[in-house]
Image 1 (tube, one colour):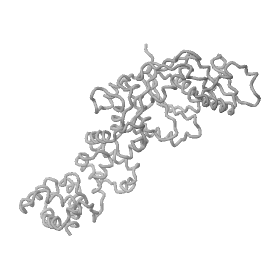
Image 2 (image 1 turned 180 degrees about the vertical axis):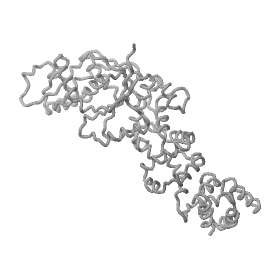
Image 3 (image 1 turned 90 degrees about the horizontal axis):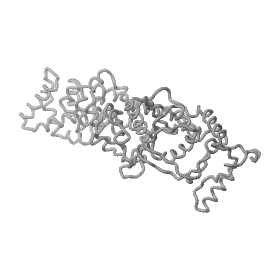
Image 4 (image 1 turned 135 degrees about the vertical axis):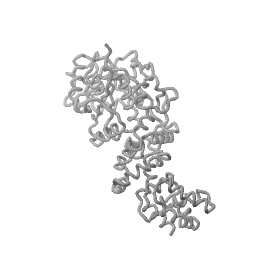
Amino acid sequence: MSTPVVTRFAPSPTGFLHIGGARTALFNWLYARRHNGKMLLRIEDTDRERSTQAAVDAIIDGLTWLGLTWEGAPISQFQRAGRHAEVARQLVAMGKAYYCYCTAEELTEMREHAKANGLPPRYNGQWRDRDASEAPAGVAPSIRIKAPLEGETVIEDGVQGTVTFPNKDLDDFIILRSDGTPTYMLAVIVDDHDMGVTQIIRGDDHLTNSARQKIIYDALGWEMPKVAHIPLIHGPDGAKLSKRHGALGVEAYRAMGYLPVALRNYLVRLGWAHGDAEVLSTDEMTALFDLEGIGRSPSRFDFVKLENLNGLYIRQTPDEELLDHVVKLLDYIPQGPELRAKLNDKTRAQMLAAMPGLKERAKTLLELIDGAGFLFSSRPLAYDDKAQALLDAAGKATLAAVLPALAALPEWKAEAIEAVVRDYATAAGLKLGKVAQPLRAASTGRAMSPPIFDVLAILGREEALGRIGDAAA
């Protein structure tokens, strides 16, 4: 019987959930789902000065919004520090690690000497074989692993293939600091072992760490989980991803109006591919995801592709569901409180009625909200420059001429409104646009909107006629 697959996402709570971390979490989540396993969430909060509860909350909120789930409660690495220290002392007892009594000054001198001789700044192993009885008084020791001095450490990586590290490049690194706190290198190993992790998927900036961690695994006689190191995300120009490229927190993408399902789809295609498939449902991603499809080259973040994909999902999303996304977004955007105050049963119903027209041209929820602005505007409307140009003398005269026919309509429906406007245009010898465009400007304050006859019907007779009358005057 095969061992159940267990993956983990292990962020440090020193800031928001950035886009690279979100993709790592997604890959772990998909791999676990594909193999009927589970993903665990571990908060690597051993850096007490930089770790904050606000960052933990932001990470959990970002994962939840993205729709990524994990098994059980999040695990705090800091709360397991006693267990980490116990394993470090166990390694000393086994002769696989040792107490190092070097002072800070000695270590500085060691680094400076190496630097002066053009060597990497490594520990020289001076306490590796010395007896603790030689320890200087008043120096709290750290614990260092006894790294192999010769040969190679080989990592079989699920993405990078076979990677070899000469052991001469891996010194006796610290696993327990002199203050009794574990280093990242030890804490990760103990936690992964105790949590039963079978597959580690993380950024390729951790590849060297895997070599050091394998030394500890071998010393303890523990089986190392399988590893897969994924390339980092770069900007469109090929440079390391920065804020100008989109290295923002997941919450920033929510505030920019992206749908979680679209961001998931976009992120899964950043570095992983299955043929030419671009648009993938969650079930399709789960069924297809594998490590073999992950490339070794950095992927490039492209806002244009993300926007286009988001627009596609907006058009595919049922109107009611899309409205729910819009309403939730109001909690995260500056204009949200003002719009929420105007959101009532009537405006909600109007927005739902306008949704088919709104979502045809919107690539983000912000654009969709912007397009629906005419529903929340109060008379007299403010006209943008293009609308103002449409409401010149000829435009106003057209509005004044068609207004009585609209006011006389017995039934205020889009089809009836369109018929009246078409009849008027034909009788006046005008193209339909010469009547429709001033009507659009008058009723929305803009030159662009959902289909104008739908807009007028959604506004209702009284409001629509009032706005047309204001513009005509």
